[in-house]
Image (cartoon, rainbow, N blue to C red; front, side):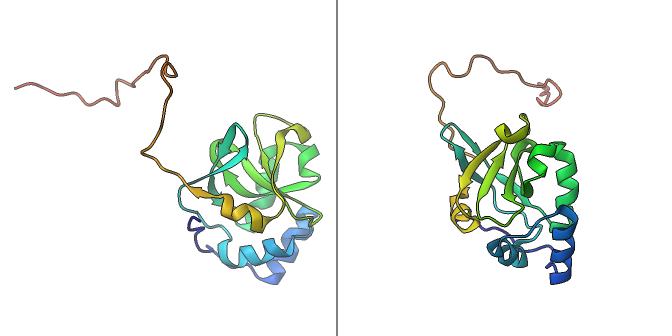
Length: 163
């Protein structure tokens, strides 16, 4: 399993109760335990299978103080009525949990809206965490013909002068 990172700030029970009240949630006990160690932490570079043909890594576990603001960024009243984000995924996606404290982790695809944007990933937070695997940045296997074209930013390519 990857290193999940250490908490940027350990929330008090009052902090937790305040956030729960603000977003209308009752946190799962496993999540309460988790934020005592990993609130706002940035895990090692990782990936997780969220569907048979899709994966996404976690960039950061949200500080509980940032959950309400992240919910506003979703601009998805249907999902926000039942779920709250607990981790920021790659490419503005996120990982969610149910507000009613029912265990489980869902992937939220920001390019969709409503319940169609959610994909169940794991039956509990404790089942989800071992699914986060180290991402290998070197090994990438492409199939023949998979790359159709490549573009390089001319400002990125260094200019070499011959002497």
